[in-house]
View 1 (cartoon, one colour):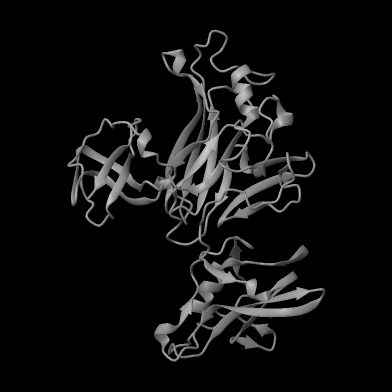
View 2: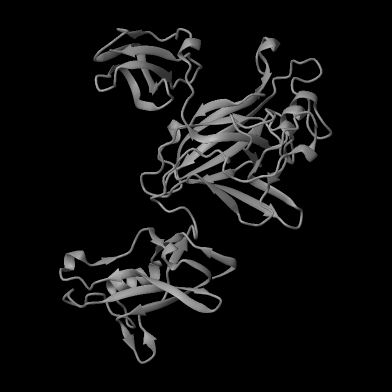
Length: 422
């Protein structure tokens, strides 16, 4: 594998091919069964990663695909799952060469089939800590953006990898970019890098998504990532298109304002096997109300909980709209996000009473709900303290004394509740 420039490679996931694994396990007419008939033969198959820079070997590192060299056979193993191989130990390299080495050989070389499989090359190590991704540490000139034209394929921010797909032929992109542009008045495609807010959340930089299916990769391990939430808003291009219409997309609400138009984003969390864990949706515009005064296009930063997607190793962001044609969505497929994996902002003095009753309040031990509910409990600093599912009572004895907010995970909007822990 050759790189355009010297770099430190984080690593990759590696596993056996079925062909090699089955032969090491059972043997065949060409290769021996690892461990032999007694199980005590000291067999192994390993692959070496050789890191080069300027045609000079810098370092090497070995990974055992099968290892029967232990003193006790109970420790012998054949790799049959995806395992992270740290290659950062090779330091800065411009090319990588792999070679096999094993115990089952003859005059022609190795008898064991020399195959292995890899994925997420130079990806996120599973022990990477997921923090708050805000794009703030990326250096940008004023009124500028990064759109992936360096063909890097994305950018890593606080443990989250935002995938970018740049097309050199069309000078176009999809996935994620980041920007600090502030133009909230220019309509059309030429203003595709601006958030309708004109700035990020308490900062200049923010992230832009283009196209349905934009992907965020998270630290990849069996438990997945524990998620908090994200701030989300419209791109200027999309917001003005929905507000006024353009050559390709309709004005939301139509001529008389009564068309039930909508535009939304869905965050779908995928587990280690690629199965959907859950979906969180957010309407960036909604004109479906009987009372037109309630119709809206989002023009501020709104916090959205992603706690339901905890356990995900990947998040897919899908866009959909009421304005479609045979070619797909007419509404420009853009939205903006900031402070990915941030805690919920809480201002107790601004909270109103919830429709769900909680008692006693204050409480020292147990908290009771008027109906069975699912929800999350946050401190006033925005830290999630605990979650619960379909309960009508909850033991809060271990919570420190203080004021807490209960965010209800209901299909219908329900105002959060506040309680005091004595």
